[in-house]
Image (cartoon, rainbow, N blue to C red):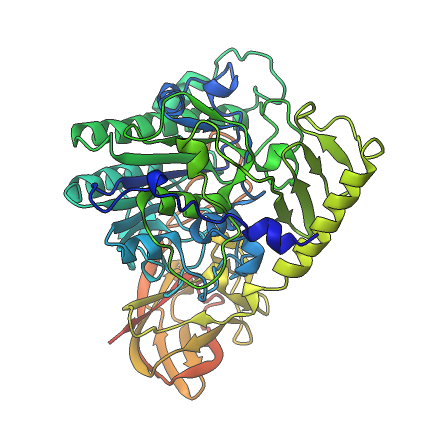
Length: 581
């Protein structure tokens, strides 16, 4: 059996009646992606402890997909949505320290819509690269507001990125991102737009405004499968109700702008729930390749074309969204790489379309699960009849040896065909000539000597315990063009430790500066947490100007090191920035 035939046949629906003709007004597109929200975190899916009326209405007003699959964790799902290709092809192999970056030879859904004349914007969590051209503005988006990391340490008015510049957020992040998306829609109502709204909730830390938490903190919970009574689960449900409220605000804004009927709204999540709460009795949650780890809601509403109440049983996946939206909008995908996904337009627009059988592959940390329309083969070689056993309780491999062998062989061929790339081997880009500011956060750095991370999860960490001149912080970088750059270091340092001189060096170039001003803010975040966090706490870091460094084109090690330390400690370090002059 050829996996390539399974993957690449029937990529796009080309029947003219299914696409938008050039004489029609192209539809707008709004894609909403949530972070760690499971299939079961919606009242429409039987969760009796939550009320999500706006999302339930969105589902009923359009099409609901019964068996839609994403990846077990965040960044791979985002890569598959953006490219229409399996994440293993694009180098997205981890969730931090460079392994979340989407390969630069990949083209994105935003590239395609931008080339077709759409105004494109992304708001929220990016998680596919920070330094340009991995940054959203280098991947087809005209506007960006959010954070590029895998998670953020504080959800109330934190430091964010707006079009490559560091800014301060305004209020609770989910509300803030929705506000910016609504502003974008209003500003572009006279032209077709593509809006990608990527919420960061209900990912931990479990922070949610009082309005939502007060409803859940002491609420009597209905007993259902999973843990629904812990503070973590209560906070997750409160965060999901906040999402529902924000989606309601966005849908209302489309109505007010008289754009609702010709706007395609897509809603899905990036993996299973971030805890063992109610999930329809499915086995597994975030990180698992079982049904509970990879089955996601998918709602698609387009009042002008998609009949309300449509239920779609055919298996589908995040890789299908690019070809589907391109097909529905009459947009030609750019790029020369074959897609793994296929257009779902026939299922959305026709009552009894021809639909070839297919296989879908779920992968994480070397584990591969294979899904056919009826069965799932798990990484241990156990076979489950998902149509009869969504909870994966009965291994039927012995009853179906031919199907078991077929799916095992398909999994082996898929690994051989798609695997092998590792983005962590790629240097970080510094000083791209098309982008003013390069940000090199602590998460992308390698600490040496006694320097320690503030937490084992790198995404929103800082570096501390910098006490000797032998200690160093390094990045493996590529400078694509010669240039002069103003250098700043984001630091904290108590008054008793000021005075250290730090130097940034690359090849023959150096620049140095002294820590003269004390800045010793408290750690924040714990007071807003509704349950204990695994991630580290954060601080308000201040920029320290080091001066100007002249970098030559090339690859090498960028090193930040202390030249002298008169008082015992250098600083706590959060971020290095280089601005082209």
